[in-house]
Image 1 (tube, one colour):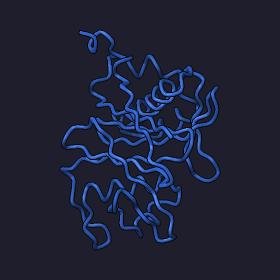
Image 2: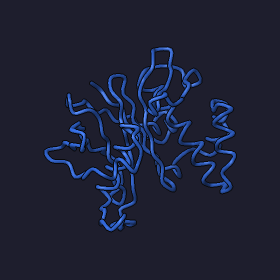
Image 3: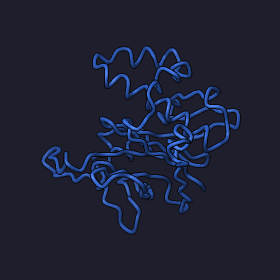
Length: 210
């Protein structure tokens, strides 16, 4: 099983990236993001959805304009592509984005700024690693944040065991700055081959080739 990941600091995107690619957003995505009153938050949310299409397009060699992202009735986020349906997950904090995709099993990904932690949640101290695991688990299982908070998200031998007995594998995402922690979760059944996609290499070829 291969999982493709991508990490981007949004300040590294070329000028005009959003304007150039906004046509690949769906009307629903425009309406949803249009309700955001903060201009920067709205712009970064739209960039995140566009970057998710770049990741899926690069991973499976399909045209990003042909990719439709939607949520299944189960709550899992997927992308419909000419090569078939794939699972996707992504996360954003101010100025930073990370995404992951797999064609075999659902994935969940989250990232946090280490400087914001630890935090107290319902009387329990949460580290950056723990909180990212909670968020990633909520996305992977589609059972919601309240349910994920009932699980201790400290991996034991790389595995998280939930209260219902299911197990999930925690995988590191390489290439993030030291102040950023990113957690990727997938099924525990197999050890995945994690491939990092350099999205900026395709956006800024002159920079990466010099």
